[in-house]
Image (cartoon, rainbow, N blue to C red; front, top):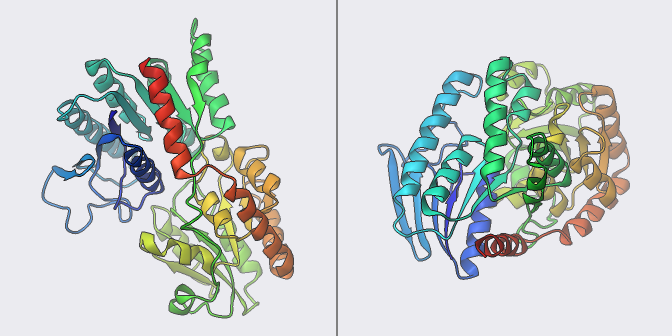
Length: 413
């Protein structure tokens, strides 16, 4: 098949969704398919076009398996919602045009959200070529933005919700990462009169982790030596330092352990919330901020922690499943997850026996959970080993690519 893929990030961009789509693409290629990937110029790490990629609005790269077209993402400050909306519109418009003039007619179109608007571009291109359109949902929008308070205007929420629902209805299939997200999307489709039958189009195809690449490694490694962590008990948050994460919980736990010289809290990554978080942590000598490492050092970063944390603000675990969770499990490290009870993240951690879950935005419970694992290292190790066993049974990149191939074949009949 000739497949057209529209996604916000793709290798070498370091966004988690970029890694997901890159591995799906690589495994589809391994199965004999040709691809045209339309994505952005790399910009995720610093919210600015990376050095060496500036100077052009559109770049093409021809490969043995097809073509990568990169367009300008018009990066803006995440806190400036009107500017960000315009940036999404510009990126979506350019992506749609680039996809329409693809060298070869696609047999199917796959678009990833967020941004939600990329689904509109994907649907229009699929309609123009009269081929199936599959809409992949990583985070449910506008739910996440509403939960965060990033969008408060009822008119904007109404328009975004309408666009979300209409895109779901027009897609031939909508793929989501978990049963929670399937129920969320299906409820919105069901809410449209006469559309109840369309809920069958919502399919669960989970994200994955490459367990051959991310493996339990030595904790005393080069990353620890570089950042003065040798011999310490390291509690780590690794990922985007944004407004979806309750990283104030990490500071609360660090303050509680401020007089323990053997415990260090590491926040590894960058994002819009980091400057404010650094100011809040100014008096805490046991907190280290580390810039995001290159992709090839991810196994080392994951192995350097004794305990990993996944702190999501209340409500967000119902609309999002952070891919970092599976990296933590694959690395064989225990996790403390501050998430809504009963959600995919909570169920995964609990069913795997891979760590401790607490209610979101509860600093006392979060601090107690971390203290429990610090004081009981053998229990923490057992949880890490259980997480590794669990994730080894998880879907591989090849299995996920096969699931998409089967879906495309089904829709083309």
